[in-house]
Image (cartoon, rainbow, N blue to C red; front, side, top):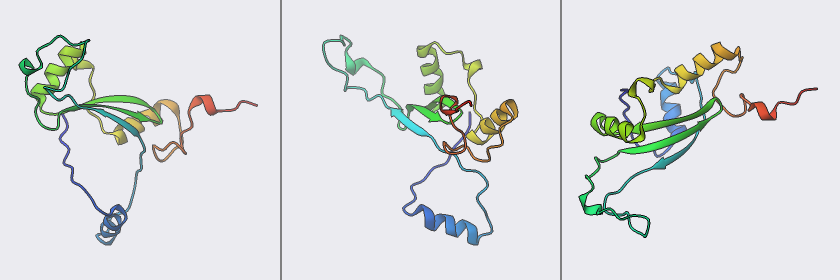
Length: 136
């Protein structure tokens, strides 16, 4: 488990300037495309569902599944309370021992060691997919 603290920022560049005035400098950038799924009890209906939706357990707030598409691969995340994560892993048939909790910075460093890449940031511009590489 890795705890993340998040908040809404109205003006990202202004916050970046504040960080610089405090003596910080950017050291790593990463890009991703994220798709999020949330399950809302009581909203499942239609001919494919014969389950009593009222009998479904209520989900904890902020529990959702995400798929992040990054330049070094796609990653699934379960975000929510540990008990919900464990139950969802079991429903998906995923062994918790196969899960990772490293940050994208750590994943990127490991990828660079494996591939010998000179990329400094985890961005689509710096890391071209293999399909785009043209061999002469």
